[in-house]
Amino acid sequence: MPGSSWGTTFSGGRCQANVTAATSEVGARPASNASANTLGTYTDVLASGFTNDVDGFYLQLQQTGVGVTAFDALCDLAIGAGGSEKVILSKMICCNGGTAVANGSYIWWPIPIKAGVRVAARLQDTSGANVVDFALIGISNGFLAPSHEGTAVTYGASAATSKGVSIDPGGSANTKGSWVEITSATSQYHRYLTVGVGNLANAGQSASTTLIDIGIGSAGNEVVLIPNIACRTLVATTGLGMITPNMIGPFPVELPEGTRLSVRGQCSSTDSTDRKFSSALYGVG
Amino acid sequence: MSDWPIVVEGGRVQDGCADTSTSAGTTVTASSSTNTKGSYVQLNASLGFDCDGFFLALDGQGSTVADLLLDLAIGAASSELVILPNLHVSLGSWPIPGAYQWWPIGLKAGTRISARAQSTTGSLSVVVQFLPVSHGFAGLCGYGRVTDYAANTSDSGGVGVDPGAASNTLGAWTQLTASTTNPIRALVVGWGDRANTAETSANFLMEIGVGGAGSEKVLLTGMRARTGASTDTNVIKPDLIGPLAAEVPAGTRLSVRCASSTTDATDRLIDAFCWGID
Image (cartoon, rainbow over all chains, first blue to last red; front, side, top):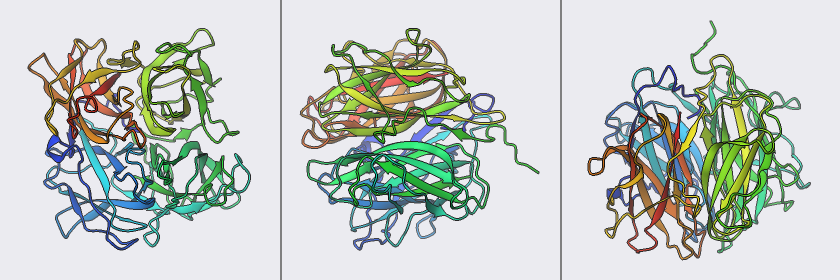
C-alpha cells in the first residue's frame, strides 16, 4: 500500500473480500467473448458490494488454464448496477501461457468504493472464450484513512489487439533498447503509476530475463522515472510461454497532466520474437 | 495553489540491485547445508537516498521443488542486521518470479543492503530485485520493524495448516503465535506448499484470526492462492500478500485457518506465514 500513511492518518483497519470457501476459493471468473479482441459480458465480483466503505483494494488477476494456448487478456473492473456499469480500472494486462499459477500478484489500488455498490468484471483476449480469476480484498480504515485517489487512467493498452504497446529491446543482449512512447501526454495529474507487462501472446516463448525502464520526457530526452523492473519469461512444459509478473506497483510518483510516458527494455534473449514484450501504464489519482 | 497532500509529495525510485549483464536481479544462493542460512550477498553497497519503503521481488530459481527462506539485512559486512526475516519462496519445476512486494520500511541513504538464504535442498537460489522508493515533504509512513510470526527455520517452512477433509470448507484454527511481541500496523501473509513434489492443482483461501483458542475472530479474509500440479509449475502462488492494514496490539494471539478445493490428505496441507509491520 504505497502512499498510505498509517501514522497520523491511520486508525483501525477492516478487510472484506469476494473470495470465500463457498466460491471454491476462486472469487469471480468472467469469460471473454468467443470472438478475439471482443469484450465479454460483466460477471459479478461482489453482487451486493462491500458491507462497509473501502478506502482502496487489492486486486489479484490470475490465469486459470494449464495447457491453454498463450493469450493476452485485458481486464476491466467496474462498479454499478447491471447495465449501468462504470469502469474504474480498464484494460489491466493478464497473460496466460499454459501454467495456472505463475501470476497472481495482489496489486493495491488506492481507489475508494462505497458500501453496497456492485462490483463487476469483464475481459477480452487475443483468442476468445478464455477466463481470468478476479480476487478482491477491500480495506477500510477509521479516522483519516489512507490517501484516496479517485480515478485510474490506462495508457497503451489496445482494445483492437488486447495487448499493450510492443517494446523491442533490440538485437543486443542485455542492452537497453530504444524508448517507445506509451502516451504523448497524460490526460490528468497522477500520484501513482502501476506498470503492466504482457507477452504479446507469444506461444513459442523461450526462457529469458528482462529489465524494464519507465521514462518521462520528450522524444530523445527521456529521463528514467522507474528503473530496472525485472521480469522473466517462462517456458511451460507444454511449450507455451508467458511473462511474469504482469502488474507491478503502484509506484508513488508525481506526474503532472501532459507528461509523456515511454518504456524501454533489455533482454537476455536476442530472438527477434521472444525478446519483445508489451507494456501498458496505469496512472492513478 | 499547489496541492500539498499530507502523505504524498515528490516521489523517486532507485534501482536497488539489478544485474544489467544478465537483465535480472542479484542471485542469492542458500547454504549447501539444508535449512541453514548461507552467507550474505551484497545487494546494494550504499543507498543513494533516504527511502520510505521499497518493493522487493523474489524470483525462485532452478527446477527443484523446495522451500526457501530469505533474510534481508542492513549494515556493514559481518555486522548485518536482519530487517526482513525469513521471507518465504516456493521453488518449483522452473524459475517463477514472485510479485513485487511493498515493504513500508524506511532506510537511510548510505545504508548497505544484503541478503542470505536457506532452503530445504542445499545451494538453491533466488534472484532478488529491490526498488527503494522515496517521497518528499512528509513522505510515506516509513515503519521500522518487521516481526516474523510463523517461519520455521528447521524446515525452511512456516506453520502447517490443514484445511480438513471437507472441500471448500474452512478448517480449524491453527495458532501462529500465542502472543504478538510487538504492536502491528499492517500484516503481510504468505503461502507455502511444504515442498510437495507430487502436488495437484488446487485453490486455497486463508483467514487470519485474533483471540483466544475457541474464540477466534476473523481479522483478515479472502486471501487466495493456487497450487500448480507437479506436471506443471509445482508451486503455490502468490508467495506473499499485503501489507494489509490491521491494528493489532502487542500480546495478541494470532491464528490462521484455510479452505481448499482439494481433499487429498497431502495436497491440501499448506504452510502459512505472517509478518507484522510497525
